[in-house]
Amino acid sequence: MPGLYPLGHRRDVSRPGLIGHHREVTTTGSQASTEVTPLPAERFLDRESSWLAFNERVLELAEDPAIPLLERARFLAIFSSNLDEFFMVRVAGLKRRMATGIAVKSASGQQPRAVLGNIWDQTRKLVDRQSDCFHHQVVAGLLDEGIEIPRWADLTIDEADATTELFRTEIFPVLTPLAVDPAHPFPYISGLSLNLAVVVRNPASEAELFARVKVPPLLPRFLPVSPSRFVPLEDVIAAHLQDLFPGMDILQHHTFRVTRNEDVEVEEDDAENLLDALERELTRRRFGPPVRLEVEDTIEPYVLDLLMRELQVTQDEVFSVQGPLDLSGLQAIAALPREDLKFPTFLPKTHPMLAEVETSSPPDVIGAMRHRDILLHHPYDSFATSVQRFLEQAAADPKVLAIKQTLYRTSGDSPIVDALVEAAEAGKQVLAVVEIKARFDEEANITWARTLEQAGVHVVYGLVGLKTHCKLSMVVRRDSDGLRRYTHIGTGNYHPKTARSYEDLGLLTADP
Image: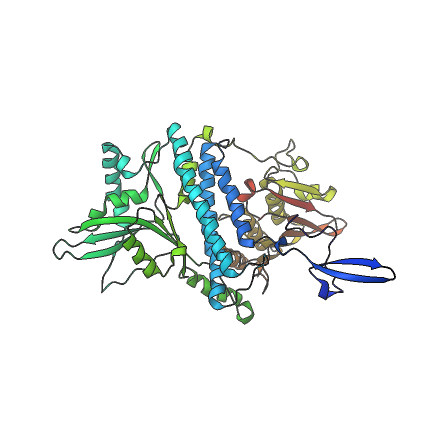
């Protein structure tokens, strides 16, 4: 089968010259000969194509008519968010290596330019499918269920009047239009921001100007104009551009969005202080070069040319789609209180070995671990009543002497961090390995690390040259028969929120 080694093939570490080859031994009479047959060149899958195939499976869930409608909208949003990160990291990293001349042939045998070309081709097909799914399947299905996503021109007079009032009181004060002229250069466009490219004309001089209006990211992506009708925020702003450019003629406007290189690269071997080096790199991340430009398919060619020239992107990096752009905002639609259009609500259950008994106090997790190992299967087994309770009870237990913990990602109001802080303040020895290189959680982890340090926790900021991705927690307790170690080993982050949806395994054990 392509992509697999021949059955029984192993790397022969004693014969480096034969690595990656299959040996055939033939015997003719008294002589034996050895032939070295190369393994098939296509045995490896391309890393980037494989990731895009994974995201295609997310899109297929959005296209599946058997899945509840609002869940399909959610999968469209997840597809968009995934693709954003793919460009910010994978595509950006590949382009950076190509620009610096350090890109090499991939394991699949493809040259870097061929890999990039495949990415453009695969991504365009997927984006076209996503747009088709949104407009012809999800929007149409929502309409049948009484949920509408109209454009501004489709609003009723009463809805338009009410939205105009909302614009003047809640939206207009936070907008900052920026015109481009000899005294004002092309403005910086932040990564993943939604923007309006506006062409205006001065009626007195007949001079035309380009202006940019940033859609505020802190406002709702889809504004409710009635209990079940939601209009894109950029449509509302576009309908009131005259308020932003008084005395000017509004000739045209188009929505666009830029994705930038946000992959953090720290030369760890040269950095005297990894934390300081990472913080400096984080301040520069938002100024990375553009790697993708998304525009609505109605954009005028000369406006697109201007954007491409000012942003220094190529035609390959331009994605023209039917609006609205940035469907990650569909998460808000998916959150509507229409339980009939969602998966049935799932509530994790406490593991039978940790189940509540008829008492006012919760079960003793450490006591249960002393008697047997406990295998956890999240999200079916509750994280809160197992792993989280294990650490909370350890923090409050006077017989616990030390807690040692790895942290890769955790929630914004993490009970895990609270338990470690409580333990340190109680005088216990607490060690936390906080991976500050966890992608897109770097700043949050730096904040958590400093919070822990201020509470007296010994914090290790990962290891130079490595990324600590393991999920481990160890509690050292003085039992009646001496010191005993109680440990949790898991595949998922110590993140109570994601533990309610992601499937992971964990083991609570005191087995030495």
